[in-house]
Amino acid sequence: MDRRLIWFFALLIPVMVWSWIAPHDRFTWWLEAGPVLVAAGLIVALRARFPLSTLLLALAWIHCVVLLVGAHYTYALVPAFDWLREVTDGTRNNYDKLGHFTQGLVPAILTREILLRTSPLRDRGDGKPSRWLGFVVVSVCLAFSAFYELIEWWVAELSGEGTESFLGTQGYVWDTQSDMAWALGGALGAVWVLKGIHDRSLAKVLAARAGIGQSEHFAQ
Image (tube, rainbow, N blue to C red):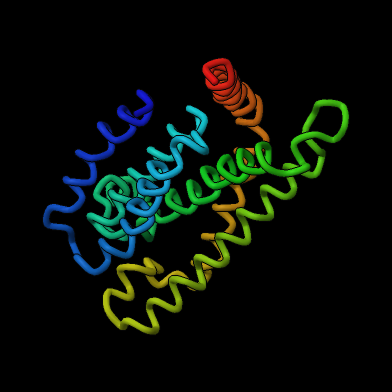
């Protein structure tokens, strides 16, 4: 297995075990930690055909940790953000906003990586990505954020269990809209700030893949 994946899981599994032990609400744990389990499975299943850039793997690990912490405490009860609320004289625990910011930031890099590797947007004819790339990436992330809000609503309506813990609205009437705004901010930040870092990180993976392909070709 790729050494980077070994590090990814070596650092993630202890956090997952901690998160699993005596969470605030077991049903909410499954709802919040479910995406981590799905993502981990996909990373392993696609490691040979579609290895991720190191930047994306690092951001995915951070996103998984954010989800697992929220799954353990529920988003409204994360102690560090309770302390932050008291220091800033706030009215709510805003850990959920961190969660939605990463929900925009990390999927933006993932979407960008997929498009740069599989779509016509990777080259506008002069060796540079299409000018539409950033717009499409941000649009996909905002659509995903809106769809996730629908999923939260459907789960809450159908289950009737742990509704407040899962939604984490804390009585804030504009919670859904602000969640999407934070995700939009994360996506815009990824496109503007991390673009160059991502290009270099992705280039290394593609170069390594090209080297492997040549080795296999010569072996034949």
